[in-house]
Length: 118
Image 1: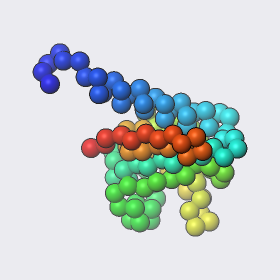
Image 2: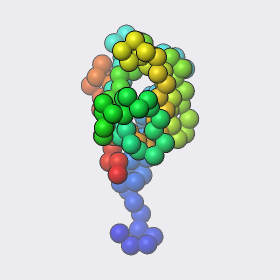
Image 3: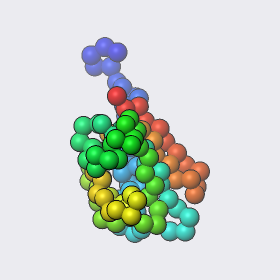
Image 4: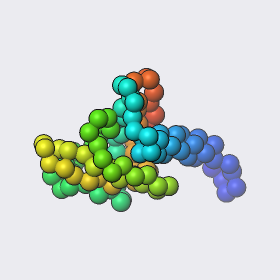
């Protein structure tokens, strides 16, 4: 690609990430209803990811979390989201930059997205 060339792929990726952001925001504001739930897969060593060391050791490259019945303190901004989840009966807070996400799915409506993360 040369200087000044329009990057449609980047535009599409940004638009699809906005779908993720808005979906997470909706869950933060309204909760999830019925069978709705999200699978969020992200790079554990991506810049800005904040997860407990024992989770990073267990999932060395990528980790998938399930946002369904038992989560708390879900907050979403333009760059990241933060969520409280329980792992082995221990409450943990995870902070995940949106650009660390490699996949997002809502199996209740057979919807899924994948992202290229370097």
